[in-house]
Amino acid sequence: MSGKNKILKSFRLAGTKDGEISICKIEEPYGQGSKPVVSIGISLKADSEEPDWKAHIPYENLDELIEALKEAKEAL
Image (cartoon, rainbow, N blue to C red; front, side):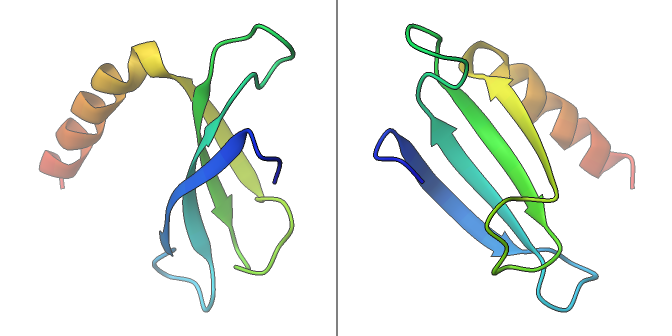
């Protein structure tokens, strides 16, 4: 991971033996001058170099994402 990227938090992926969810801040994800994003990575094996799945969320959309996740949790 480059010096412009920072892992904010990692935690176990439920339902897997050693899977992991990682939350990262990525500076300039799409080239010079692009805005930073939060990257949510899902790895089925924690020692993987790259996540099996990832999503980049613009910081401007974090509040909406958090609200949607709260709604999803309440729908259980």
